[in-house]
Image (cartoon, rainbow, N blue to C red):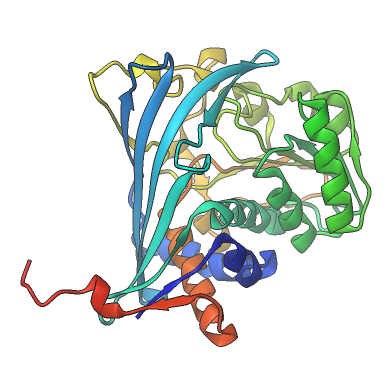
Amino acid sequence: MALVLSNEDIVKLLPMDVAIRALEPSYCDLSRGEALSPARLDLLTPLPEKEKCVYEFKSMPAVYPRKKVAVWRVNSDFLTWRNRAGNVRREKEPRAPGDRYVGLVLLFSMETGELTAVFPDGEMQRIRVGAANGIAAKHLARPDASTVGLLGSGFQAGAQLLAMCAVRPIRRVRVFSPNAEHRQSFVREWTAKLGIPVESVTSGREAIAGADIAIASTNSAQPVFDSAWMRPGMFLTSIRPFEFDRATLDRCDVLVIHSRESEPQSYVAGGDRSVVPELAGGGAKAKGGVIDWGEQKDLGELLLGQAPTRTSSEQVTCFVNNIGLSLQFAACGAAALERAREQGLGRELPGEWFTEDVHP
């Protein structure tokens, strides 16, 4: 049978500490070649009825033998790029009935081949991004790191704070984002959720000043962090490849990335790649160029002891979550399914609905 879970179920089933524990071994397996997580496939079609709007069909498969699961994450999205306070930002438009988005995760058994679970990707998406950065912080941030400077107050930002609090004794957060109203709302929400001071400030420089951990958690297609803000002992982390510029990355003593598989396979109907700023050489590439991700050490190698790590309290260390991995959905999905069965969450559908007696 297949279990249908909601976003609300996923939040209950995957608190940040559970997600971190679920993900860590998957990175080791991937580095050892014992799991498969191929490049994301993006199919992009410019839409004529609205300037700078692109339909994207995105798919991400993975196989995770440790948990005997395979996964397929798929999104059907409408993308726009808008200038917000001088930065080009990538945004999704909800066009499904009721102003809703469309993103699904399908989990399959490697023992029977059948569909075992299906759920929206939204909450797991931000949980897995936060958990990945939390794992990096666990190994690269100073053990006594207690202050956070956060750039961004959007959908991903709260999960970043949850992750940092799960691995370090965080006692204060300062937040900057261009939208003051949204920033104040974020501060109220996360002060209540974390039980520590979360303060709104009026510039990125002010947010980062004095921070042990600096987080870029934005949807910007351009750098949002100034290398002049760096100071000894800091841990930097981002959720996108464009948020730190070349000067910042070059000044880091230790740099680890999420994956050397740094580029999705992107196909644009009509062939005009300029409709997608990231594909047109915009963002960080327009400001001095990004580093060659293929030459960097990744998170799995860090966990296996095959990458440089922090060796002093004065070093500046950095983790760039340069691209998502489909394997994250397999590892987190397996954990969610196991806990859902234990807790009796979800709605069961007959397995016969998703199998057939006809040889394909």
